[in-house]
Amino acid sequence: MPLDERVDEEQDADRPEPHVDRLAPETVAQAAHWFDFDRFHAEVRRVARPRGVLALWTYEKFRIETPLDRLIDTFYTDVVGKYWPPERRYVEEAYRTLPFPFEEIAAPNFTFQTQWSLEQVVRYLNTWSAVQRFTRERRYDPVAELLPVLAVCWGPADLTRSVTWPIHLRVGRV
Figure 1 (cartoon, rainbow, N blue to C red):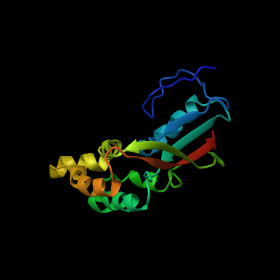
Figure 2 (cartoon, helix red, strand yellow):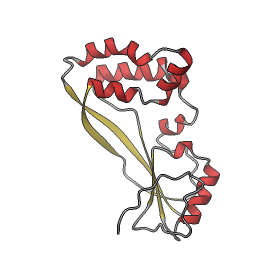
Figure 3 (spheres, helix red, strand yellow):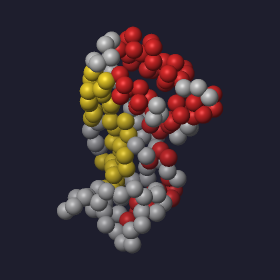
Figure 4 (cartoon, rainbow, N blue to C red):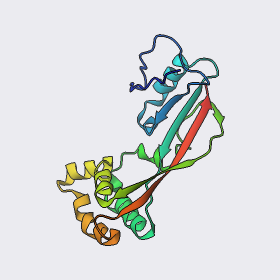
C-alpha cells in the first residue's frame, strides 16, 4: 500500500471518505500543538475508519553533551524563553497534556540521532519560532550573540558532534 504524504489544515483533510485504518495510521509530526483541537478531533473522527489509529509525535530540545546542553538550555530559557508561543508548553510536556479524546495506546519513546557541525546547529537554532520572534521584536539576532561562546565550547569548526532528540508519541484508537 503506498503511503499518502499530505499537508492539510487540521480541520480540512480534503478527503471525501474515510481512509485511515490500523495498517495506515494518521500521523501528525511536531504540529498538533498548533491545531484548533475541537476541529482537529472532529476531522480525525470524520476521516478515520472505525477503530483507526491516530499517532501524534513531538520531540524535545536536542541534546549534544553537558557543557553545550547547559549553554543551549540557558539560551532556550533565559534568552528566548519569553518569546516561545504559549502552545509550546505542549511540546515541553511531551504532548502528555495535549487534549486527546481517543482510546490511548501505549507507545514507546525513542530518539533520533545524527551528526552535526556547529554550522548546522546554528542554522537549526535560527528555525526556532522563539528566535524568529525575538529577532523580529528586538531587531537583532540572539543566535549571533550566542555563537562566540557556543564556538568556544564546540571546539574546532570542522568537528561534528552527535545530536540527539528525545521523541515522544501519543497514540490512540479513534
